[in-house]
Image 1 (cartoon, rainbow, N blue to C red):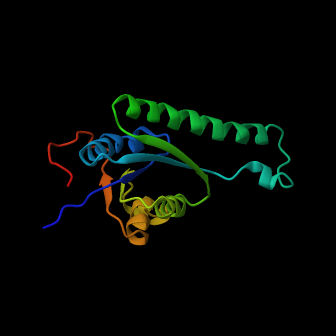
Image 2 (cartoon, rainbow, N blue to C red):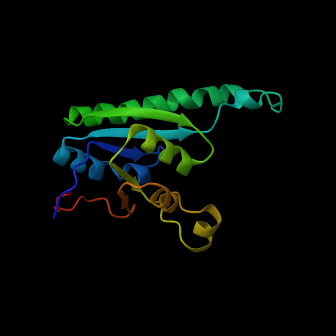
Length: 160
């Protein structure tokens, strides 16, 4: 039996505590494989693209603050990971479809593993909103590790 080796681990984040619960798992895998962690967030396209339709004052200013906020958020996480000895970098993409954005970056970066938290939607909410995790698992040909938000501990099992 051959063991998988990971070189690039993608961690999609949406600034929520739930999404960040995937970080300890990604960090453990990165340490075991001396892999790089790519922190990804997808933001909505700039409102400037819709300026003709936007008549409300202040809307574009709010939109212009989203990207710097996302950069600051990811850089803070990257700093923490680097402080812990894990190679990490940040990627920010614009897009309305998070699953598509994650898959596109995963392919462009040739990642070996995606580690992400599920948001725990069930029943009608899952049916209406779909599952980003499910779409990613269907569309990508690399392993996807799903972390349930209520399980924050990294168990002692090696990721090989």
